[in-house]
Length: 314
Ligand SMILES: Nc1ncnc2c1ncn2[C@@H]1O[C@H](COP(=O)(O)OP(=O)(O)OP(=O)(O)O)[C@@H](O)[C@H]1O
Ligand SMILES: [Mg+2]
Image (cartoon, rainbow, N blue to C red; front, side, top):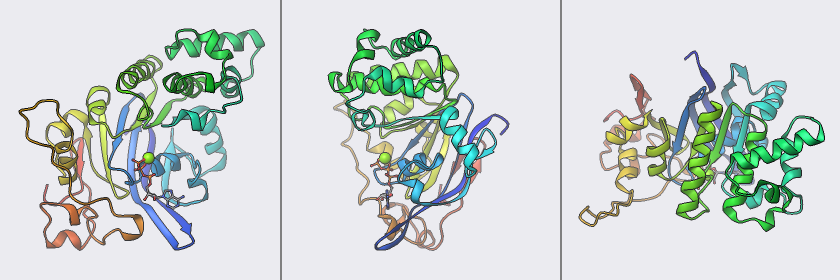
């Protein structure tokens, strides 16, 4: 596609461990268009964070063996110069735990300043306050002069967002950015993030467990299982008619507040650890529709228009 910002093709990520090599991500392909809002979902341990971190080789993937192709604005991110440039200006991240990413003993203003280009003192102060205002902090001046430990979890998450925006990235990668917050704060911060992404024409790759968030805020969806994409397509189409048995299972497990709805159906079993991926379709051992052939070879990803599914039975 012409307007692709990020393109990942057949990315595999292999770690060397004392017990030998493990490949939690054996083959991921995905793309994010300019200004597009894309979700990546899947159960815990599916390889979502490893995929996201691999894009700019953030730890621990800096020590991993990455194979395949990662391009940002057409430039090869395995190239050091392109990677350095992309880290500075192209892609910014927001993570789940702001306390772990913020330095507790450095004032908020100084942490944001690090992400800003060189500029005159007064201009820098104004820019910092504007950023803190943008992310919805009620008293930007006070927040700027605070240490992170003086702010609440939600406020810290807004500071993280301001830091990410300081570099004016074309793509924001948010890895479960609100999971640690209460539901009301979650919704507020997502609203702020959504507004900012639209306002600045930024693309967003959001990793989340929450399909409600996906339905409300995102345009396109990738469903990941055992380090591969098993289904993708426009959010509305996929959620209205999931094609892969795994996606169907994830949707059936979404809690409903309606008492007349049938009880939740969890997907039986768990995601296999990377050193025990089965030879064929990794979901086959848990799949209610699996047949003999499923265990023999990894199914191809088949495309139908804007949708794709990795299941011969779909
Ligand atoms: N440094 C590492 N060395 C070896 N294996 C690792 C390393 N980091 C992660 N893994 C493995 O990679 C797999 C995928 O992990 P990842 O963190 O990407 O999952 P996830 O989909 O983000 O899960 P969650 O929803 O819980 O965040 C896991 O099985 C994990 O054990
Ligand atoms: Mg993760």
